[in-house]
Amino acid sequence: MESKAQVVGTTAKIIPLASSKGAEKLCEVCQSEAHLQCTKCRVTFYCDAEHQQADWVGIHERICQLLVPIRTPTLFSLQRAGRIEMQLKKAELIEICRMVAQRKLSEGKHQDALPAAQFCLRCSIDVHGPSSVQMVPAYLLLADANMGLGNLALVAEFLSQAEWAVLKSPECGRAVHHRLHRSLGRLHMATGNLEAALLNFANDIYFASEEYGLDSTVTCGGYFLMADVFVKQGKVPIARSLYSEVARTWHCHLTKLFKTHIQYVQNPDMMLEPSYDKAQWAEVDEMLRTILEFEQNDSRRDPPQTALVAHCLAMLWFLVGESQKALGFCSMALQASQLIPNHDLTEPIQGLLQLVQSPHTEPRPGSD
Image 1 (cartoon, rainbow, N blue to C red):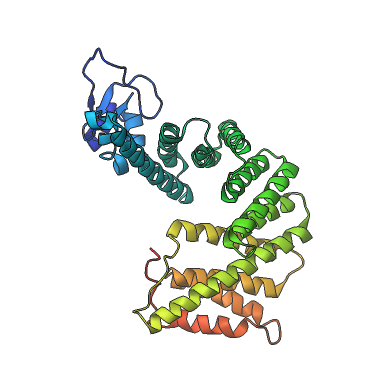
Image 2 (cartoon, rainbow, N blue to C red; image 1 turned 120 degrees about the horizontal axis):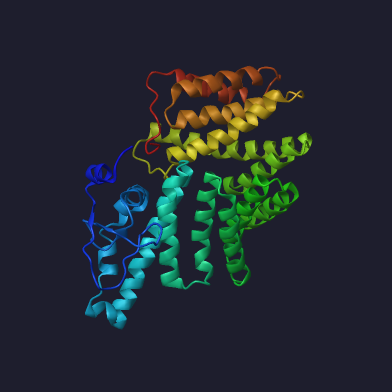
């Protein structure tokens, strides 16, 4: 088993704390008594090397030096102008931690997301107060991280606090309501309370559609989760209808991205909107594969639906430069579309297949 000395040696980021009569130093991760100190910022402390390593990987490497002015009192920081500046610096830290935690969650790194989410929560309390609706994003991040780790009791606790903050804030935005109901629905689904899950996913869809529109890929995420519940209940026709809506929405969205890519190839000087990162593409891939598997396992085979979903997956992997994956799904989509006379997708699928097989095809810039 690796000793603490070995862990310290690999990172060289901590030193033992000298005995002090001042305020007790607390571990950044667990808030217990600290015995080690970060050598870079010297304002962050840990109970042991394991927690230091977890915090370094999770968030501290990103914000180490940003903590120095915030945690080092000066005469200026005690003045009104200084306090305002400190609040702005903390608000910046909250946004950084939120983005880091969200990215790690989208990558499936739930354990690594915890330090960023925890720091986001503590910093939010400092800036907004413990009862503010501004705490909700941090509660939801912590709930999502613990959901991935299977800590359902903690998920319930964080969501309860988020729900209470939202109930006390009538002015709370629709985007926050949508995220809260989606998280509540996932919790109820995990605990087997399928009716409560359906109710929350219905609310999720309502608030997401109000905020982003009915045809948004954000909104269709709620349709996908609701369909999963109906599959568990054995209500296949309803699930099929919802999966079809998800596939249609993503097909429309991916077709637009694909056309933009073709325009860029023809005119490299044109500006491109930021694309999804690999973790987000992987999430979409998993969603579409689930729908495709559902379709293939269903006794009522629907070739048009198979063609649509396989075409989605082919465009997705073409856009991120995975030619072999794109080729496989292209072939599947073409085979399904050719079962229907004069199918609308046959020509677009054939066009994509030619591009995939072209030796000059390049991946979409910014998709890494």
